[in-house]
Image 1: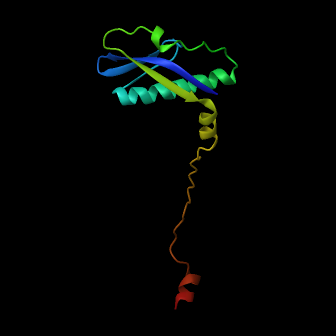
Image 2: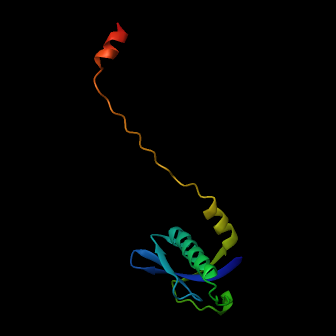
Image 3: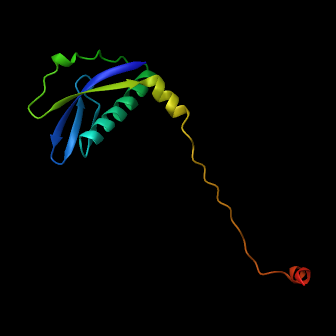
Length: 116
């Protein structure tokens, strides 16, 4: 399913904070605007996947024109398609590590006879 929720970006000391107008429990931050926008999408994706899995009722998204921002804040539309997110998660490669233990011993007398 496709969703769009608006987030407010604001400066908080040395980071850029993100808060969602309609989802007050979803908050994140980044070191700059680009990272904050990426983190906003990631946070919203996670929240929406859990909400769908647990059949939670989601609030209707507020129209951008109805959201008031303070001076220095910016409004960001965050679009998430949970069907694409689920597909991406299902196709993620799983890293498997194989450790091979090699035991080295000095040649046996039998091996010494073969090498002559």
